Amino acid sequence: MNYLEETDKVIFDLIQKEWNRQSDCLEMIASENFTFPSVIEALGSILTNKYAEGYPKKRYYGGCEFVDEIEQIAIDRVKKLFNCEFANVQPHSGSQANGAVYSALLKPYDKILGMHLNHGGHLTHGAKVSITGKMYQSFFYGVELDGRINYDKVQEYAELIKPNIIVCGFSAYTRELDFKRFREIADSVGAILFGDIAHIAGLVAGEQYPNPFPHCHIVSTTTHKTLRGPRGGVILSNDEEIINKINKAVFPGIQGGPLMNVIAAKAVGFGENLKPEWKAHAKQVKANAKILGEIFVKRGYDIVSGGTDNHLVLMNLINKPFSGKDADAALENAGITVNKNMVPGDTRSPFITSGLRIGSPALTSRGMKEKEFEYIANKICDILDNISDINLQEKTRQEIKEFSQDFRIYPKAIF
Ligand code: DSN
Image 1 (cartoon, rainbow, N blue to C red):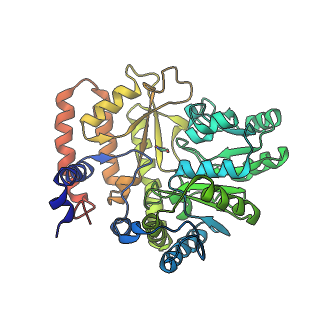
Image 2: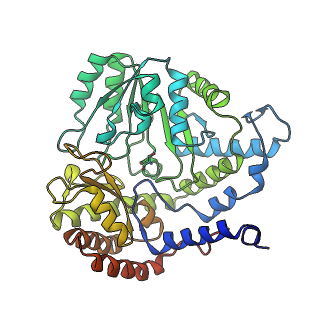
Image 3: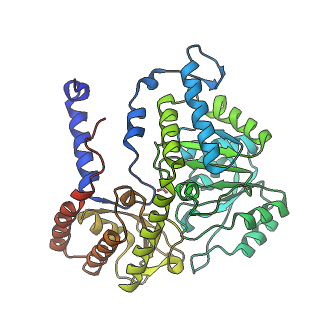
């Protein structure tokens, strides 16, 4: 029986439309991905019925023998993946994970030093509109005009501010992070070093990016970005005292019952990440992003930091007669989904911006390689070179739809 189709045709039809959108367009938002069909199956399973407050073997409700095993497998797999000793796999999202980290390790009005949102940081790194910027005193470092972190400046800020926690790991930074240097800075002022590796976790797992361990005291990540798992968060540490505080902060601190279907899906995703072929996938993600950057530069578009060491490219449009918002809209019309983004030295507002953030993970998961990324990068430049040409956008949308058919990832919308 097709349960959803028969009982709720409205939602069923909208899911089919979204499936077509995902299949016919090019998804290049750097934080999005296509998860594994096996992950979707676990997400859609009967595990959603179970309440299991607490942790494996220490639950508040009965009937947890099988979900205990599932959660323990998720914990064991993610520890192996990142080579660390302790894990909490219950956070519902990256923001929840980060909230738990602060509430476990800080008192209200303690000091956070993180990357400014406009320079590639995240809302939960102390932005004033986030609870993390209201409940704690937040201070920010940024990148230089060349798009890179100046570690000497971070050291100076840390000495001046004396933060309780330093956050490293970003949403829009294109270069490798020096976790060791960050730890030296943190140690010099007695701060905890917190690595938010939400964007780069899949590359770390594939050994294509430095591991935050053993340098960070505490690490959080989402599971749905470069890791290709279900939507959710995870917290990792090598420090038993810290993880004990984290466990209390997640439950009962800020969450209730864990989402056992999502935790099973996380375990399945981590299983995929542990397979030998994951390394080649992560390598391809990086190679594809590199090609994007190279073609953009060749076609006269400036790239923040001149290139990329990871899965994303930041196009700097400061010297162009159109904004990030204009570029984002034109590409969307052409069937290419990206997001407008602030760039270093940006004078436009966060709603307009002078940049575009363009990522390779999702299309790499669809099986695209350098040849396809070269084609796509040139299509992006064609659209931007002729930003007002609506006919070209419509024609490109059709071309992209045809090109995409060889790379359809799911046999159906609902598993
Ligand atoms: N929304 C994510 C991103 O796009 O980077 C961060 O939470």
